[in-house]
Image 1: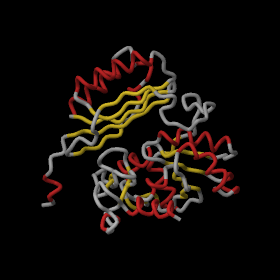
Image 2: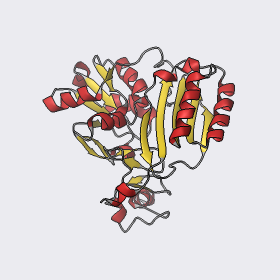
Image 3: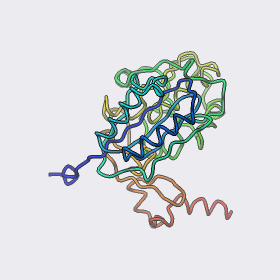
Image 4: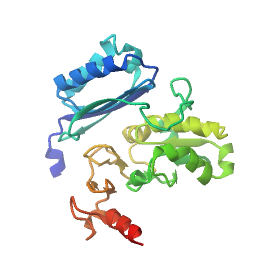
Length: 291
């Protein structure tokens, strides 16, 4: 029997977001902070006038209690979280160090206030339909909207990738790097859980793309619905697990805590990788600065 199958995974990890007009931010923040503390949850919740974005981990009972509270408390009913599909996965240990509830200008920063997903965003493409398009060889562009360090761990076989360091650079990167004829055929974009595509899809519509879709629920929902078909590697996640495979299981990827670059299992064999000291990306950056 596989040793990993004997490990008890009793920590439930959930991620969810919703774009909706939100008021009473200080009151909502205080209520959520108190609730998460009482339930022993860890992770992060971002609140802004444009919505909510959360990543939480705890026992199944306490996560479910949090979800019930959000759905039933009048203070949070305007968020409509009862209609949101929480993306769930399990781990043997708590992947977050602390609990933070923050008020932000944007729950996912793009710096384009005219883009308001609560008012308009591109239609969602179900994971099963994306798989069908890939199975059948349909002619379309599959665009990865994530940062380059995420893409190194894995992406779809057919994906077009951008040289992207920060999500704020997405519109300018698309304008500079995507061919003009891509505007006339279907464009399906994807990210980890879907939130970035809510804004990125509108940015492309503004640039003249006529058939823009976003992968419903992102890579993690695709994994849950379709497994690893047409996907190579793992999916980077923003917690101590670092990456999940198509079975939504934690992989052997690691994070360099000096430069915060993720490292594949093969990259960890490099003599340049010393835990908590350096990795190939740290040293490469130092060499470039020295030139």
